[in-house]
Image (tube, rainbow, N blue to C red):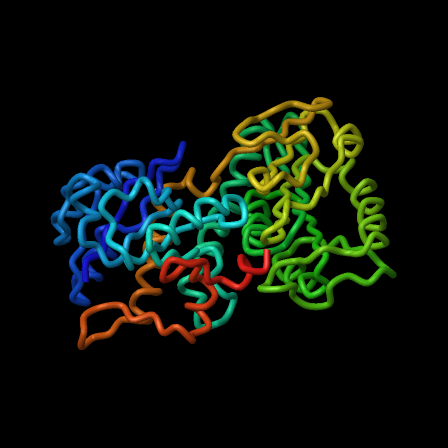
Length: 376
């Protein structure tokens, strides 16, 4: 079996879907690994490092030729896979709801496309979950970006010249990214509070030493939403939450928003009026900016100042830690392949009725097969 590793072509994408470590592991299983020249440059991995691991390095057409499995971080268009054979598998982050034509292109080319971001949130798939591994890094990096933009110290400092008060940080949305943001802000010495529509997260917030800010007397989600994500809330809850946030956010120095709803625009959490209530010099980091944004006025790929408040809208925040993000992403893909590896045939055998396979497979046999896309 031949596994092809692509060099990313998306703007500002420095990650790579394999590392010398995972290339060596694939080869150890009995696979042949071919890496597009320059694929690891953004993550400080040389072509020679892949060669030393036993992989072949060459131009894209040679790498793709005869490949059974093509792996990438952000999925390319079918037209950008010259010579890919019919029936070849493509595993990457696809964003199918944002670009249905891309998915149809895979079907038309006879590719079996698999969206890694659709990995089911089940125990067996935790080690394969690229969203969790990348969100963890994004939550950390969001706090570091906020600290840089804030221009003041995070911890309380007592000096002979006087005392500097600790920064106040508010995390909105307590998934993987939010929990890491809480932990990181706490490590830096901030006074941290957090909120979520899922009542079950209150204990998680408090276990990290942060204050839980929750709507009272209006029912939220008692447990997890679909796939571990939050879902849309009632208008009554939204109104109560807006009032709670308005009173709390005016006292904060740092706000980090992380709320996403799969297949839908990110929910609006912070309005222009709420931004105006914050102290000049405060910072908001919108981790959902590429999905429509949680913050009114945030702009993808830009840092803007609104009412004296800096709003950070960096794209692909995990990719800003390319070396670590690539290492985790690559292990996620190896764990997926390894879980379905046929030792005798020395190939990957994705069982059609497996929960993981059904969760991530978008196209097969010239057709779109994922139920969420068929129903859309």
